[in-house]
Picture 1: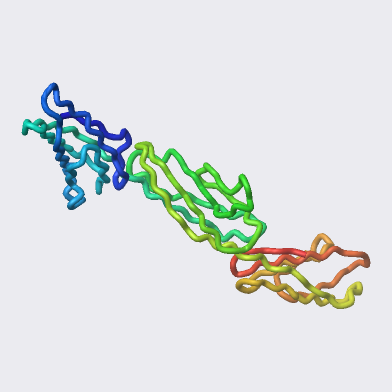
Picture 2: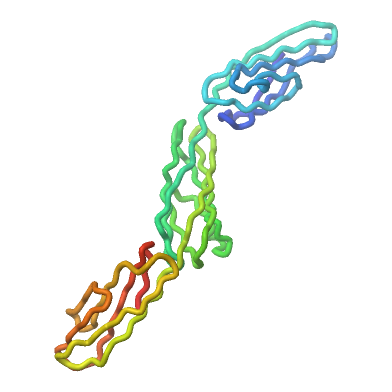
Length: 248
């Protein structure tokens, strides 16, 4: 009796066993009985086919036995110890990226055995072409359009075991910054009125730069007095409750 098995043995991953038993000049082998020493697998703990596949239910060392019987009733058996490594656990988080700006992904995978040595990301955004995938541990991705994207992460640990996970990542639209102002005269208050809109959440922060090198405000509808005549470029930047920003 003799057998081999696939080199990488990881929990919950199919391991291929191959019978190499020889009849040594006697009658042909007609019966095989495998015992994988894995009681947690229930009825799958044994097999009677020549070349079975078995998925071990937990990490550990398993003493696998093969018993073969020839047509004439002669019996032989062999046992081999197989070390089954733990699978990693793929996990990640992401910040609230907005359409037209980068979403940042943070890997938090657990190796369970050895260390994580490989990451493969699919951002669920085929329109981004080659940028739709990454092998970095903590990548960033620019989503051009708002929507919900299914992101796929696969990790491999130093034992050769892998695990993957899927997560829905929302990408909201950014707000649209707009404003109007009353007639502007030197040494008289000019009223600025915010007209910004947002498709998601609400506007939660405003920042005005009145363009004269000194004047700013964080009010929604501020007034400002210019002390000198001239043409001033006023900028308003708004941020909504989802953290998305726009300026005009």
